[in-house]
Every structure is written in structure tokens, then in C-alpha cells.
Image (cartoon, rainbow, N blue to C red):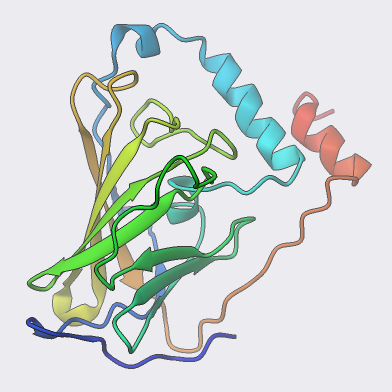
Length: 221
């Protein structure tokens, strides 16, 4: 569905690792400690978050980050001109665009927040460091380990190949003074998907009454 891309070359760093390809999580892929929540966040009624996430699914909203990074196989496309890296998934979600051409974040006064946020990246040796701000409150906002994404959230990710390129370590560090007492870090280790893996797309029909009844009704009914 998407064409394979060549290895990216960045001036001053030489040839950087090629992250392109399909990557999947397995049962032993997540190292997620409990999040250090603020007292106010820890006291929130979790059923409220649950209802918001169900509503996002029921109405086919874009799920956003971090959910898209854990919900299905992801496809990373590394641009040959050094300007951008894109991440797609089969979920109800737009492509993540990570700009690696040296630009900064957009002006928040003119940028409409989105569920993926606005991401810029740079290489530190063989590690891709991605900085994301500009999140909206749309989509599935729960964060692994506890807490939720808000418009004040700041995410830093570090992508690093392991096992000769067969695995991809991604550490996620979330900072948000209203949610976390200190930055919350967890790690996913993705496995390179088998040869022949293709991207799938799942339809989402908010007008499907049977689907709505299943998502919002009592289990088994």
C-alpha cells in the first residue's frame, strides 16, 4: 500500500538508521510503570474518562496519540530528503508527521490543536528524538500507566533500533503539571513485522445501530 523508502541521510550525522517498515507489539512488548499522578488527577472519577473514550470510538473520532502507537501495527515511512518521517496505523487516525528539517513548533496562536499534536524530530547519534506539543482533547486520551492527554501535554519520544534492526525501542515521556507530579516514562519494544505484512484499514460507521448498541450497552445484551 505504501512504497518502501530509502535510508535517510542527515548532514553532519552521516547515514542514520532506517526505521521504515511495519512494526508490531507483542504480549511482552510493554514496560509501563504506574504514572506519578497529581492528587487531583488521581482523585478523578475514572468512569468519566471511560465514557469519553467510548464516545470517541462510537462517533469515529480520530483516536490520536498515544493510542495509535499501541492499538495496532504501525508503519513508519522515513523520507529520503531528510525533511519528514511519517507514521501510519490501521486505526481511525490521520498520519503522524514528524518534521526533521530543523523547523520548530508552530505558533500555538495560529495552530489548531489536533489529537496527534505537532511533532518535530532530530537525531542524536542513532536515536531519533521526537518532541510533540499542540494536542487537542479529541479522541482516546488515556495514557498507559495512568493519566490522560490534555492540551497542556508535552511528549518526548526516543526511537532506537535493537537486535540488528529486528526490534524498535520507543520510550515515551509525558509531562503535564496538571496530570503528573513528575514526567512519566514507559517503553514499548516493537518487533519488525514478517515479510509480506500489509497495512489494513478498518471502516468506521457512526450510523451503524448494531455497532452503537454493542459499544454503549451492557455486555452480553
